[in-house]
Image 1 (cartoon, helix red, strand yellow):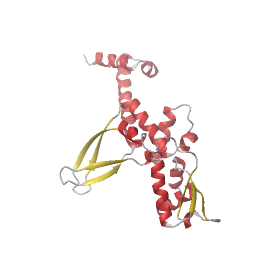
Image 2 (cartoon, helix red, strand yellow):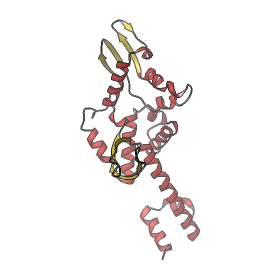
Image 3 (spheres, helix red, strand yellow):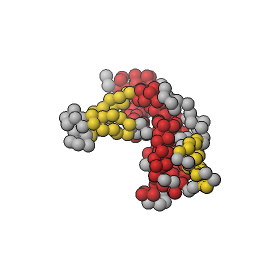
Image 4 (cartoon, one colour):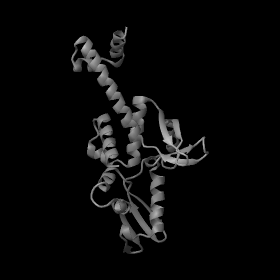
Length: 232
């Protein structure tokens, strides 16, 4: 997870020169991923092609979907407005003040104590204050029902943070949900685009003796014209 979050921050700060890494790391995960989906659409369009494996029969499935549809569905729901920095709710006599998780939280969980403690560590970071009547309660001491309610509230307030795809296997009729990881899709597309550009620069430099900076200064249509001339 740490590597994915580092990539997410790298993509965001590269695309938004006015956004520092620290500021990007403080964005709620849902807002971060929403911006990455917008970046994907701006660079590569809204259609995404992916592969999935059926968990029942191991059949390979090819998927094609529209990332724009996720934003349209979520932004017309109850969490269309940006969430405030601090949120609260009450249940079973408990009053909870909490915030949404961000990249700093996820990166912190990837270092230090064992993975089995991550859920508790995240809870300790997100719960700003918990009380029952006049008595303050540590996040680790909250009852399981309250922790479950907090999980549900996080999903409701920040639905962009955990988008799931409803999948079905035509071979065995199994149905399941799979997470949609925009960071992986965007990083793969940017990586492939960078490799194609590097090869184009190599071909033009080798054919015409131009400097890399001069080739990159060409507009994409003009660079493509020169590449097509090399194929004649």
